[in-house]
Every structure is written in C-alpha cells, then in structure tokens.
Image (cartoon, rainbow, N blue to C red):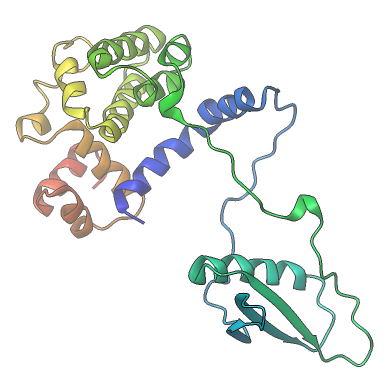
Length: 265
C-alpha cells in the first residue's frame, strides 16, 4: 500500500467513530443501539497453497476452475477455509470455481459443506462522500465531521467559501489551541485528496490569529503543512526517514529537523 495512503488511513481511523458511524446510521436509516470495537488485524492465509487447481472445460462448453482439497479428518472450519480459497482464486483467475473436498477419514464426514445465506458475501455498500451535501456536514458541531466537508458535494467555485466556513467553524468549536492545530493539520492533509491543500494553506495565511504560518520556520523552508503532517504521521507509524524522504521529496536532514522541532527526535 502507498505510504501516503497509510497516513490517510491513520487519520480516518482516529476519527472513525465520530465521523463514519453516524454516516452509516444515516445510510441505514437506523441508530446503532449497540456496538463493540473488535481487533482489525486478521490473520491471512494468502500464502497457503491449495492442494490442486485446474482450469477445465466440459462437453457443453462450460469453462471453470476445478479445485480439489484432500482432508483426512473432520475439520469444522473447512467450509470457511474453502470460502477463503474461493475469494483468493477468483480474484486471481476471474473464472467460476467448483470446489471438491476428497475426504479420507475412516468414518463418514460430518463437515458442513454449504454456507448459510447470511454467511455468503454477495456485495458491499458504498457511502460516496463526494455526493453528500456539504451543508449537512457544515451544520455539524463535531470537528471530525466539519473537516470531512472538504470531501463533500459542492461546486468548485465554492471551494474557498467551503474552506473558510470549515476553518471558522473549527475555530469557534475548539478553544484548545493544540487541539485546533491538530484538526487544522488534518484538514490540510485531507484537502490534498481534492488537490486544494495549497488553497487551504493560503486561506490560513490570511488568518494569522488562527495559525501563524508566516512565522513558522518550516513554512520559511518552503515545506507545506500538508507535508509536515505526512512526515509526522509517517514517522509515528514507523516509516523510516529514508522512505519518508523518497515519499515527500524532502532531504533526510530536513526531515530530521522537522521531527526535532516537533520533539519527536
């Protein structure tokens, strides 16, 4: 995955409960009356090899993959293993697949061989941020929703108006200077997804009471706040200085200087 995308992921994950769960509720038309956060790390079997896989064609002309697995004992998870194989094989070969498990045990198999309807993956649902009306997000008092308005639906001619509105609302909603700085930096970085981070910084320059970019030594070095945030978040995620240099186009010595100014080195 692109290292810059990792930083976007980190920002969105930090704000997930405040931003995206309400969006899901709106999409579903119902409140989430219960939720429990689960670990997001999933053990992968991508490197596991299937026993046998063939591309075959029948007399009637049908063409598909034939997958054979050999199993000597009753494995209660076999159905889920085969389901996982199905996704990986279809992703690679883009052909229909028929799976056969050859059971080698002494007694008849008791393994479940068919998924229930609610266990079968058939689709995912899309929440298009670019189609959400900007007024809906701008009316929020939640900072995480306000900064998301930069990705919402508005005319390009309204870009400056939308950015100023977001910044002013953040300023009014957040009195803690350090917290305000955090959301401003997130806004700058997220605005890169719409290629308007330079415009965001210019607007902030005209609002020195909010963030004193003109007197920021990093700004004087010609380094945008968006890149600064990318470097900080990347370093916190464990990305090496050398790789950060390649991603940002900034020399390792300058990256070290940035991190030292932010008390990270």
